[in-house]
Length: 226
Image 1 (tube, rainbow, N blue to C red):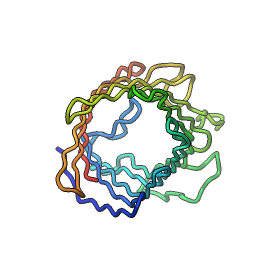
Image 2: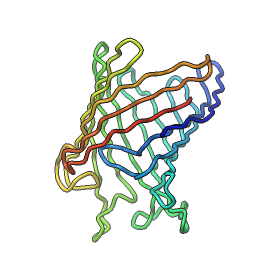
Image 3: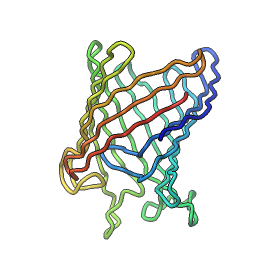
Image 4: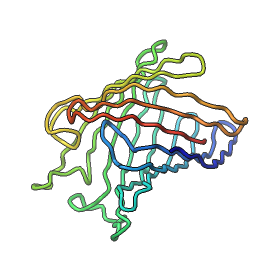
């Protein structure tokens, strides 16, 4: 079941503060599932024409599920290129979270640097390259950094009031996503933005996701207010 919550948005000139609440039947990300129950994913931030600063979280409805808070800064360097940094922070509410522990071998923070390229002006095709360069992405035995890398191609096409999407993601070597070079995320999706008022909108999205490496398959439904 999907629920929605209230949002607030304040604008000034070419910048704005924003608040968004997403609710999904499962938390599916880059071809893997991070919950066995619905999740609520609140976020807020500040955006300009070039810069977007945000804090995002995910909390499952199950009592002891995986939780996370992410801190992201993204900058549009060129019309065709966005670069960003995300600090992923895994949470365990049943123990000390250790938020201020940034020791590479013990921290639960995970630093990611990424780039999104839109090479064609008239073709809605984008490429995203992500590398986890510091923190919790470690080898279990040696504690060496895995430097897990993920590349995704995405195509979005408008059909009237709907947007159809197709995406494919892969990793290049042994790391978080797979034990070897592999395609880990294939999918198609359909989204529809339902306008309620001039301030509020209700984006909805349904995706079919297949991970060829693990042979897992998901259908993910998300509803938002922003």
